[in-house]
Image (tube, rainbow, N blue to C red):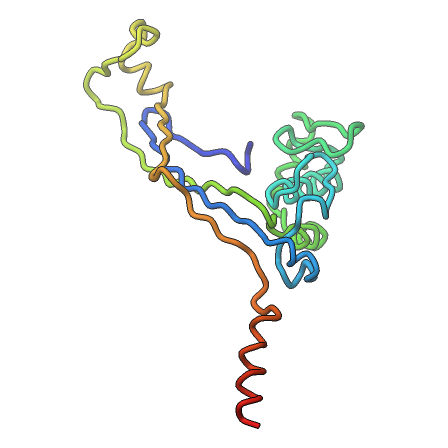
Length: 194
């Protein structure tokens, strides 16, 4: 929630334009090493908590291991990677603050370096813009808000809108740069020169 949430301001109307990108991979790139193809197929890497592999899920598990190692607990907004691990409470507050100030230690960085993007993924990019509520009387368009004063609404509520900019989304396919047919043209040219 902390890592993937979208912040909004109280007393504002915030609109999020959602841009979607789809990434796919052809099966033949499985033969290429992960580090060279720069992606992980969902059945290649098993996570401790999450059922499906995504880069974000992998990095969240790395963060859980980091806090467990430093504070012997996992913050509530991260995955409980081990069933017997404890969730951090107020007694761990000081340790959590220290840990968050140094969240990029060597072991955590090495863990996150192994978290490559997924070979098949649908990614959403939010683009936000916000406007403050009017300083005059706020007119509620629902019966639920009629009992609240304008001042209460400005100080305690926010309006959030989500919409897609297009009726479609872009997709890209991961593939190898070279295959057997790319060399045929070179072989043909070489045979003409001979």
